Length: 69
Image (cartoon, rainbow, N blue to C red; front, side, top):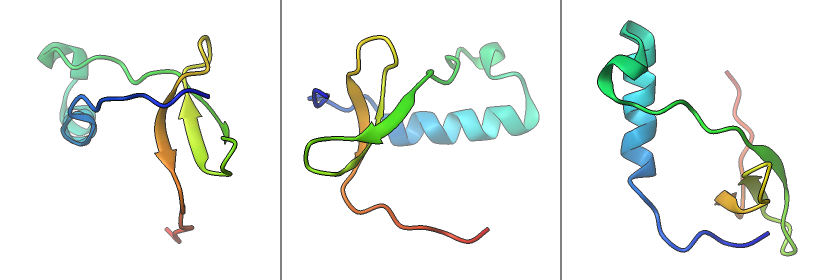
């Protein structure tokens, strides 16, 4: 999988999705739909979320941690 070379405000976009989804329709605020993705591991063993059509990774986690909810 190829590494995406630049970030485009992902953290802020995730926050906007979360807030808008709790109270309103995100589309009302110009917030795009969540992308479709597949998960897997890259050659180095990192957890990767990638575009299902292109295989291009948009999120990588070198050392993911399990959380209890």
